Length: 268
Image (cartoon, rainbow, N blue to C red; front, side):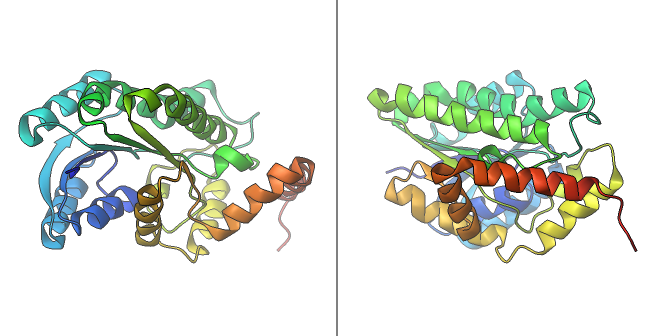
């Protein structure tokens, strides 16, 4: 019976909602975050929802912290069945404005954090014939303007997931990658970018989203059960991806027009 799950970035947002969705099925949750208060609150909510588990502080940039977390899962839960590499940060800015430090920070957390999570937990997953769920973004597939470092990091998560899907099939390890569009979350708390207006624009997109993190967690739960590899929780995202597969130029033109619009000085 598979019922032990690890989640990074479980202190808030989508990570918390994934924990609660699986907790309702009575799962044991290993929850990590750099936000101690948030992750303690998630565990309290998990217990109220019918699950149980433990928390451990973990910065996904540090491989030794992830291997220590995997060890804790082995000691406290006897192993792990599902890992969710969810920890992530937001950033934005046109390519010429982004510093190399902005790139390093973004790649270190959003891409290498997922690579290290998979690496640290792979021995346990081989044992349990477990499941990997990597959280990417529609940005990985659509490459919107003024977020090149975020786009590249998330596209890397999709490419990693596709590689693992092929390589781990013989070991009976399932792999899924989730590409949500904007949704109501606290991702902006970690937002880093050269211009404050960019944060306001992203904030508007998040507020305008009709879908909550809880809705997305439920959609992931259903699609994982169906064995779906690429999980696109937003209907608009699924439509946009279908258009791009048929006619990529249409999307490239749309993104170029959007970039021009973003660069225009705003008239009051």
